[in-house]
Figure 1 (cartoon, one colour):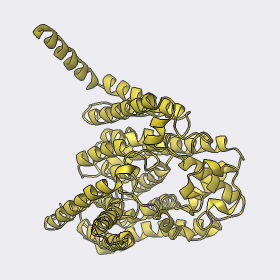
Figure 2: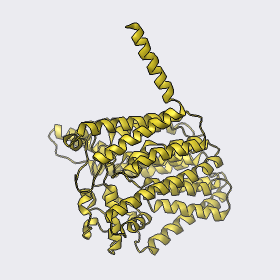
Figure 3: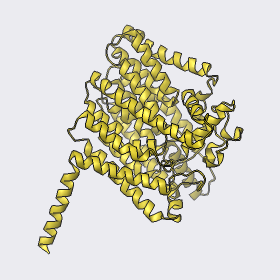
Figure 4: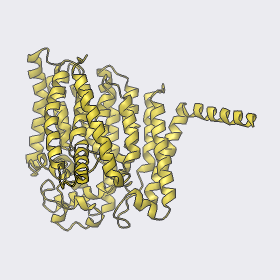
Length: 478
């Protein structure tokens, strides 16, 4: 018996050692990607078969246990491989090949547990029909694929900017939903290639390890599951952002500063929330506020490039500036994943226990937005002469934490910036892994029946974060 236990322990140790090698990490992650790709074929979010995607609907359907087992195994393998790979001493080429291997299995399967690509296709069809998706919902015209779109997005204007709307219109212009989905996947590939090209020069100019940056950004499990598999467009916004920052970083000529600002404007025209990075980009271009004249001149060139691109595209496309207010429609959904919403849900639940029929979610969200405005100003001021990309990542975290609606893949925004900054990412990496298991790529489904208990848990997190933030204000940024 003792000999058998020793043999088992030795075998387990050997397996762990193998998994910590470059080959072990690479093929562990690839196996995880294959498991998730099989799930996309078995269930995913097919066009006409099922309208909803949730844990309950999966378990009730055919092969439900197998699908959930593959899902858990796939996520576990991808997350473990990404975590272990952070400490590997490997070449840039090795990282790029590994990222490609993990992405390929999910390129040619149905959308993975998310219907966002179907919504993109119908929003693109709106453009072809002469409508403005920033103002007009999908239901404004008879999109031939509307039955495949999640109900919430049928009557809600798109929250994305004109650049993404035009790209969606291009994808839908072929008149085929299958072709449109293929083009959206192609956009993901182009965005990942853009990140692979832009991250190394940015990392070198900021004197950080480019191999670490590439690993954290390209091999993050969010890329395979939520972006390539689920089809969310954040990778394109981040690729444009990183390309713009690469042009801005260092003592760059004024022309490159304007061009870099234009790329930042393009990123904002995909995801408008990326706009909070712009004031930090001005600091990056000027080296901070120590030389105020340089800040006005060089930072102003960046802002000018961004504003000029945004104005030209908004007016030239004929879509106008409706995108600036379209985010309000996305906040109609209520979920415990948004801390501000979770506080409101928790207070409502307490009121119900004492017999009070109240709804404080709108008030909680409004208060959170006021706090967000103050937090963004404070963060910018604290990082005015320190690492601006660390401050930009923190500002994006504040947006995620205080916005009316929060999705798990939003954590990719600060992760990309902190991968090339001085800020440590260990706790953020752990948070990414946690949300991989908590939320499906449709932003819901895993723990919705426990919304009220989870809202109380998130309320506790809000109290802890507020306490930590006050303490942190007493510590100078270096």
